[in-house]
Length: 197
Image (cartoon, helix red, strand yellow):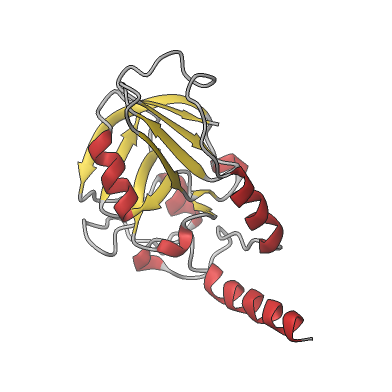
């Protein structure tokens, strides 16, 4: 009986906060772009079991300029340095839905510390109440650093809302804790290859 009430209490708590997970900090209102994960227990177990070290060779021909692998199923980002001396594994947030998820090969084309943010046209269409522009700072949904990919509108970036990490909570981008994106920012360069699977 006690165990069941704790589970119900946890679900109620998570449901009450889940509506705010997909919106930028300035526009945290309930919307239908938010996914509320039904059975967290099953997904968390699967997520933890998938969060493991990987070898780069099955995914990349070489490590020229370093390599980033994002596994949206396990919600993990892997980084290998060009000389193989550094390997990093970070938990991530991933896109809310499959139609917002882009998979395949790309690369880092721009790095910005203290990025500004503008919603994409499709974000604005889904959420007209969102601001047109958010400058750098604690209200910025891109966090402290952003790695811009060759795909328009797609980034690997930080987040000030740490509740998003480990969840499907983005509109297409890959999110990291601010301390992790700062570290990855220092390790990568323009030209680092990126693969999303």
